Length: 256
Image (cartoon, rainbow, N blue to C red; front, side):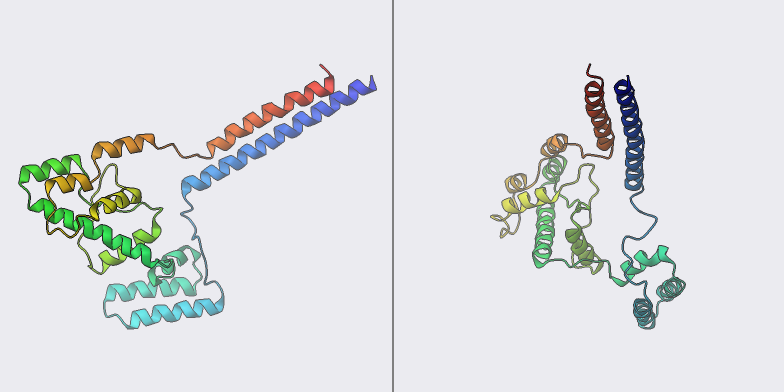
């Protein structure tokens, strides 16, 4: 009788412990999901000038920028950031880092060369299309990607170098808004095909069709992509774990 009571108490304690753990685990998943959905926009990711010495250095940088510029709007922005640093307003720190160029990671030479080659290729494609009959150029444009569609957010270094070139007017390739934009992998495939034709003054219709990515090909590529895992997978794993271990424990305790 005592053994049966002991086993009952043990089973009850295990059920309560697992239930509490399940609630905590689920709550943790919800918190993770909320964090991901907000994309951490309320607070800066890095705060590297909280100490007095770092604040003084940032204030000196802002004051030099202000003194070297005569534009009143720019000077007013410097004053705004100076007050934010002096008053310790953490909300603006990441914005100030961007303004000073402190958030930018180094861009490797290989990435810079690749970005410029991609832009030169699309400039060559645009020039060649302008030399073709209008109907032919329009037909190629409807069936193939002939315009630069930007870089994905994951390609931070490529995007940084593109923005630098665009800001300083070193190229004229604006980003064309595509429903299904090309990826870096597509650009590299195009560069590999373009390599043998890049010395031509103008690309022929056959060359353009050979180099450019077909729109039907891009649609198939997008459909094949697997959906990324989200925090909901953690919730389903939690339920499976709960069911997998509770019943075997109960069976062992009661020897059913």
